[in-house]
View 1 (cartoon, one colour):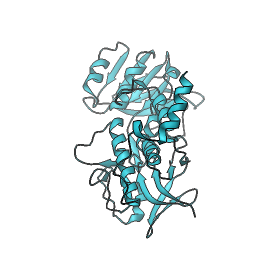
View 2 (tube, one colour):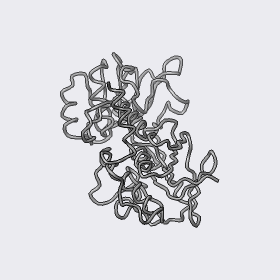
View 3 (tube, rainbow, N blue to C red):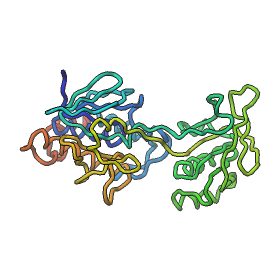
Length: 339
């Protein structure tokens, strides 16, 4: 039975940085993720420019994602994608993580699951019962796919507003449909939308039905609750995400969760379960910074706490890279590659 020093549940930004930092602290690492690709929610908007990481120039989410994956692999962790955590069982001196691919074992756990397995809230109106349409989307992987097309977006949160802002620049037209009287996104983005000449807003309205074309494989038009029927080339739905944290249930309620299935932590990353720590979107505490940048400190703290749990006399934190022997050879190679 192979038992790692720590096992990280979740391969988003927090889990990936925890993998790097735990490796830096000399721990053996396993990392699992339910999804087939690492990167967490960065996979939802690969072409969106990410601005909120200190010292990192704005770059597309896909580029940031790949850089994080490369960094996470620095110390050769065992990474298991398309692997679902089904339950956690605590034994006397190790954890057993039950997955759909079989059990994994570790002395400590770091939960970085981003509020659990996330999946988009699906549209359930007349027309959706027949199955999937090729032009019904719940994420935007490539903006250019919508060039010159007539788009209808359902939703008024930050993601829907981001989509509308970006697509107005390349689509023929964009119709934004939302049930509330006002949009719920950032003020600057909303102000920018009002300047778009090819954007049509339908507040206090929602999709009533999807009308298929003759092949029934694509949506030809959308009927709205205000009685209008709009011809469309594509429909984008942004109604939020459902999350599933049932893998924590086997711990018998020892992990306190809020209404959004976020772990209520003590001392930022500590949980009531000895040896189990958490970071990223999966946790909440007073004055938490809800940015990608904020999860890096939490991930490092989780790794540090795991190290201290395993070795009480270990330093409280890892040595900075400029003084760390681990990086000397890696730095030589990087310098050589740049010449």
